[in-house]
Figure 1 (cartoon, rainbow over the protein chains, first blue to last red):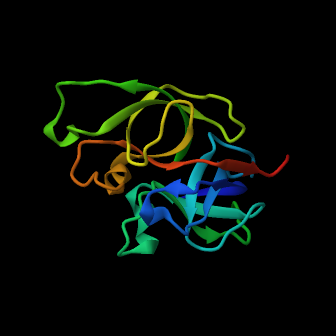
Figure 2: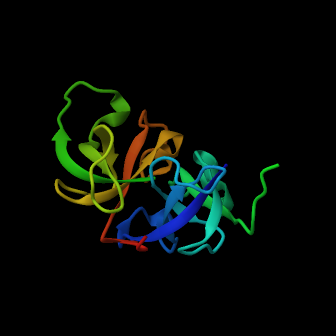
Length: 88
Length: 90
């Protein structure tokens, strides 16, 4: 899983039926010091996150598991909202 | 998933039997502001997208979860046509 900041929303009215009613978030992955790391991506929201929050997300087919048994065609999903993180 | 703009089509007469009658499109990934980035890719279309449209592409094994793609040899599928991308300033 990776840390990211939610920076936006995607509106797509015509989409796969298994994606309907799901919130699509634009994520900016973060490095440990909180700076931007890598390309932005679009993820399905499984937890109720919103713009401005720091979250962690999962990549790959596992991103659809929160919606089981529906087979949501996504390769990225937000699965947690980060309150804080500490680097030792 | 990534945002991408459709820039072309692919015609392939000889292909895997599972890919027969699928529509293949050439897509250019882009950032949320519309700036192109990365290399072109070929994606199978499941939502009737067309050249010039901004779409949502799912990659990897998850692409096989797109409608009608079960057990198909694909690693990129177009699963949505994007109306708008709202990005917070800053």
